[in-house]
Image 1 (tube, rainbow, N blue to C red):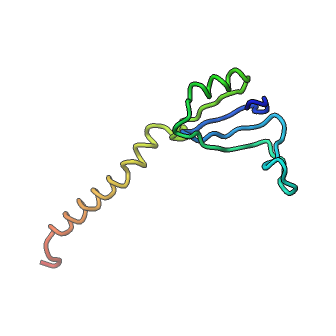
Image 2 (cartoon, rainbow, N blue to C red):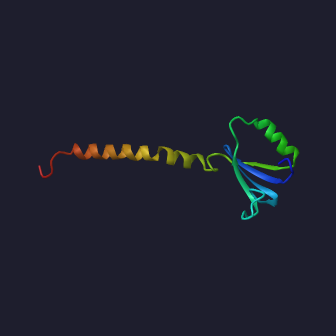
Image 3 (cartoon, helix red, strand yellow):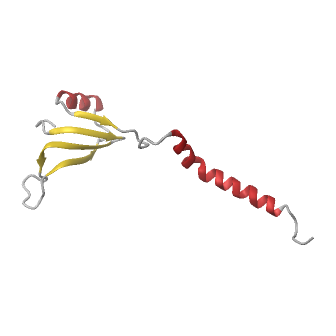
Length: 106
């Protein structure tokens, strides 16, 4: 970032994915490493997020933030969050009605 080679980043939670303007080889002195324009890292919990954001904005880096739930809708989250519970309750109701029916052929 200080070298001005970061073009854009996208964050999801503490994960940061980004793209360099010029390809970078890591480690720099490696003979076998292939240069890449993409990187992924985690922001440490002790990092000063405001200072990091200010430094990125001063460097002209495009910052995109993605929601942690990957942009899914509320209905999707409710369905997959409570769906298994609803199915389990429905199973218990069905079993209890079937058991209350009495013996067959009576």
